[in-house]
Length: 416
Image (tube, rainbow, N blue to C red; front, side, top):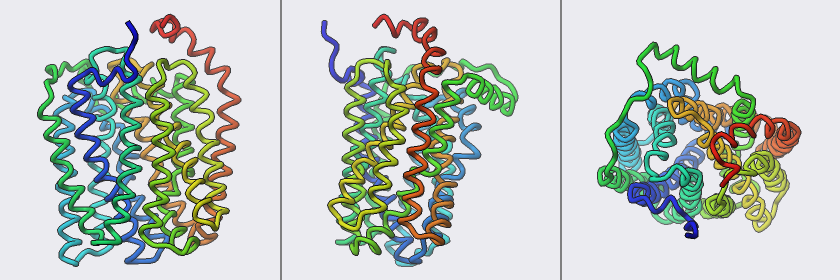
């Protein structure tokens, strides 16, 4: 019998997860765009864009390892219901402040910090919950790839709608729609039939469990190499999200619509890469995508930094989005496939730390650099650095493949 193109969607629970998350993520991307536009409108400061970006994600860097220990010990399902309710409260508070016209930058920073605390628990829980949603272990790689495609489909639609809404009715309604969209996620989670949670981790000192997770990840060269590459790409390659508003206004002489189109172009590239990964039938060959992704991202950033022409900038953002999704989804798929079950939450928390946790430091660094050498020069430097990272990882790839071969044989991946 021929295997379906998207086997993960055979699972009812995964269908519910897909539908609820899809609606909510569109709202999330609208809010991200609205937040950076509002901050830039209030301050016209690249540094403040960096500070807001830093505050929204720095908790992931410090707290994600502890979030991973929590996720390995307690129900991921109940954890996600809790984080979605808190995230809804955060978005609706932002909407209320914006609608009443009293919103200030310090409030945005405080609420961004609160969202960061939520994400430090939500991200590893979400990543570790995916295997519980699929009925067959063979469908896991497909589920992860579909998840990434869903995130980036929302990344395409959300900013495009957000840009038009900001121009038409203002940022407050973006926040309001995002807050209401969490109802879809919570309803989908409550509609699931989830097996009772079984704790596979023995009780012990949380710090000891965090240490075990670090030792497990960093003593194994393939995991260590993927986490380090992810951290470096996130540090420099993803600064573009806070610098695009400056490019849209100062370089391309546009407004919120231009910003929305640039973010949507990045989403088109990301969606294309996500769809391709979702339709691959095997994890074999995933290493070449992890190696190639930073180079694609780097080429896109270099081209975007040099462009003064909107169509070329939009074309460049396609490669930025494509490189970003290949890096995120391919790394995630690789790690989720090889991890030992009792360490899944902790490894996913380290992945969250290397990916989401490094973005705030990168945002702050990008804001400072842009303040001194300009946004375009900052993006040019970031692009060149990503290309260098790609070359270094590519040279390590043959040795890493040899280490992985026995594990793939043990899991039966070579026999499929």
